[in-house]
Length: 397
Ligand code: FRU
Image (cartoon, rainbow, N blue to C red; front, side, top):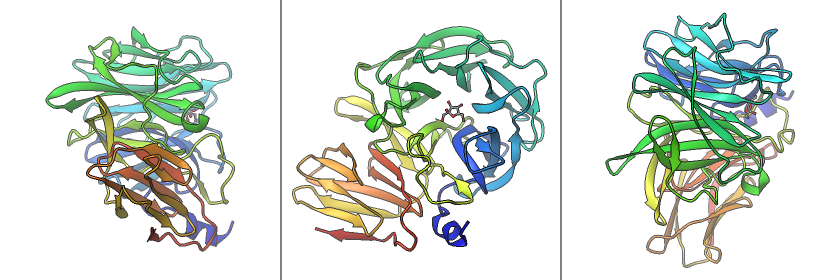
């Protein structure tokens, strides 16, 4: 591999594994002063395989320290996606064990702040005898735990409850709903307050069947009564969390100390995974984004505000045919005819305010995240320019 590639393509702002393959973020949890980021990882190569949980920690969500692999694949199966909870003292990881013909939910315990995990001896803790049943997201609810977990082909997200993370009782199922043109994966359910009211957001990743029939994440805004999730709006049409190609399997942190709801997605996709220059690592994660709600077009919609300063802020006069571009890297801007903002050939309609469209951009060595200033519309793309291309923003009109 070329040293050139390593220096040119390694992101500066975004998380990448030190080396080898990464897909979904897993086990996002704050525990004793550290944000823990686990991730789907192949410890042995730059392609998907031998799924295990890689591990890194941070105090600010931007500067990460790489740690040893936390949970290894073993003779019982691979370690697929899942979540982690902290009781203040210990961390428990809840993951899917994947073997030929079976996916079931398992737990592992860490008594040393996530540095090492011991798999529970009586795993699995939830097994329906199904080939596809995965991606448990566990969170605290009142005096017990709740798990959201999907039956991917049935397009159902199921909810279970437990007091000890070992015995799980079925509560309800949600779906099929909205987009069902691919498997449902990586659910997350969490509350957000809006105008003094508590609303619940359900995230469901979908592969394929999202924007351009690619991988993507849809969300539902609704209510959760401890048993059942009920969407507030029609589920005929999907609401997309991102209108780009490269934001998949994103989930949020448990235990965030400032009560923020922080989301991180996998900044890649399952469609064109092979089309990139060789690097020592494969794939990056999105910038961490704080989620919120706002009213837009008669609905309460999800907003995402990055936890870092944007690289560029652009104010566009929506009455003119004006554009902005990143030379040689990617084109972005606003088209007043279609009323769409665009990044490369991905686009989404936005409503100008006082004839202005205010955009922000986070540019890194292999990605561009374009979003409206209010955080309501995002287009995320992983892009690999030819060696030597600059990433400077130029305006042209
Ligand atoms: C999503 C996913 C999950 C699964 C993991 C395997 O990208 O397919 O459903 O747990 O990746 O690596």
